[in-house]
Each structure stands twice: as C-alpha cells, then as structure tokens.
Length: 138
Image (cartoon, rainbow, N blue to C red; front, side, top):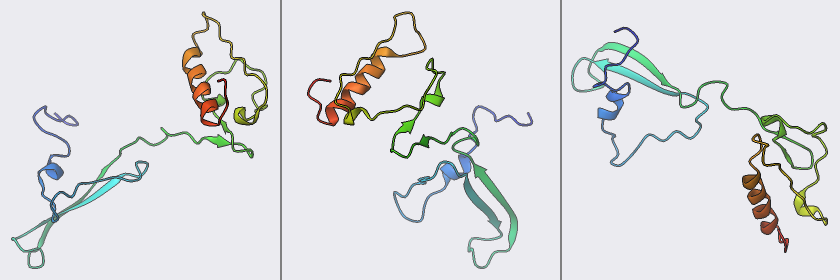
C-alpha cells in the first residue's frame, strides 16, 4: 500500500484533529502559490519546555501545483491581452482600442458553427462593461 492512502484515513488528519490555542482560529492561506509548511515535533512528556525532542518532521501542502498559473500580460494602455489564452482566428492581435473610450458602434459577430467562441457569453460581458462605463446602448 505504498503511496496510497486508505479510504478511512485523511492525509491532513493530524492537523484536523488538533485544536488551536485561540478558539475559532482557522488555517487561512493568503498566498496559494506558496506551499503551506507545517513543522511537527514529538516531545517526551506533556510540557513543551521540559520534554526531550523525540522526532521532528516538516510537512508541505501545495494548494496549487507549480506552473498552473500563467502570467497575464498588460499593455501600456492598461488593457489586458488575453487573446493568447485561446487560439485566435485574428491575424493581428495587438490593435486594441478601449471599448469604453470608443465613440463608434460595436458590432460583435460570431457564426453559429464557430464552437471556439462563446458568442453569447462574450456579448453579455461586453454589454455589462459598456453599461458600467455609462454607454446608453450596449
């Protein structure tokens, strides 16, 4: 059974069974990109300052695997360039104009057979974005 956890055991069972010094205190991880490190010590006796150190271990728990998060590129105008996240049918992807600064009508066309684009989702997002910036007709 090497490398496997039996169904009745939990990998973090030791931490779940412990009680904090302060009531209602919980483990909150603020930066999920760094592993949560717990140092465990087993002492001989009840008092921590009188017992001899019998064993010591360090346990790391990763909330997010390394390499999962990709950096988002931001242009000098403050626009997020998320086109690289999916395969773009556009030849030139660097000609961005902020929609909220535009005085023209926006036409968003997606064919019914184009399954790579979620047309309704993107149209709703653009509509919400325009309404948030005071445009009358989204």
